[in-house]
Amino acid sequence: MDIPNNVDYHSLAGRVVIITGGGQGIGRTYAHHFAAQGAVLVIAEINAEQGASVAAEIEADGGKALFVETDVGDLDSAEAMAQAALDGFGRIDAWSTMRPCSPISPTRLFARYRWRNGCAPSMSM
Image (cartoon, rainbow, N blue to C red; front, top):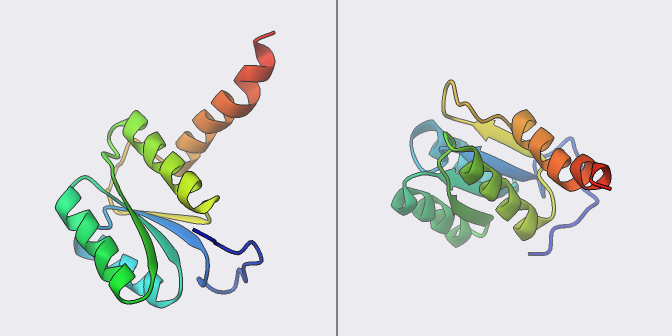
């Protein structure tokens, strides 16, 4: 998808936002609210039917959304979701986590990503 790089950071318009647990409850509400403000959404949800439904609702309303089946309790699943967001939209601007006490945080994923794609390759001479 074509997402412009000249984003106004005083607005959600054009910002790529991951919402874990975005297929139900308050996560679904956040997804629709962010979409109404023009955000581009990544719906990360363990329940495939609910997650796909929210993404389809957003797209039907003219928004942009990507559903990724994700178990945020599993680091590999969460990392694959973040990579899908990067592959689909080129960046991640914001992350909203609906699961309390999740062992996965954006900071932990970013550190792992940087290690694999930055530090580790340069240290394996």
